[in-house]
Image (cartoon, rainbow, N blue to C red):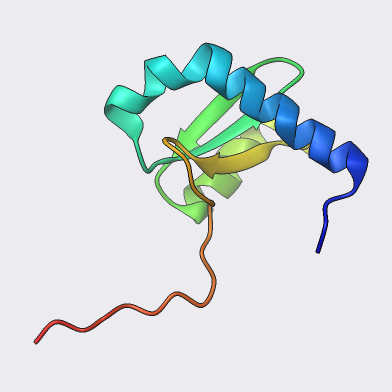
Length: 87
C-alpha cells in the first residue's frame, strides 16, 4: 500500500529532522529504541516499548501526528516475524 503524498512528505520531513539534528546525538546511546518525531517543531520522545511510546506521545503531543521509528533505523513494529528456537 502506497503512502499518500501528504503523508510521504510528512515522513520525509521527520526523517530529515532526525538526520540533521538528532541522529548524531541519539545513536551512540539509544540505538534500537523507539523515537517519535514531530517534524514541524523538531521535538521528539524516546521509549523502549510501544505502550510507553503511546503514553509519551499523547502526553507530549496530544493528537498531533508524529512519525515513529527506531533510532538507528528500522520500523517501530514488525508483524509476522518468526523467531528461531535455540535448543
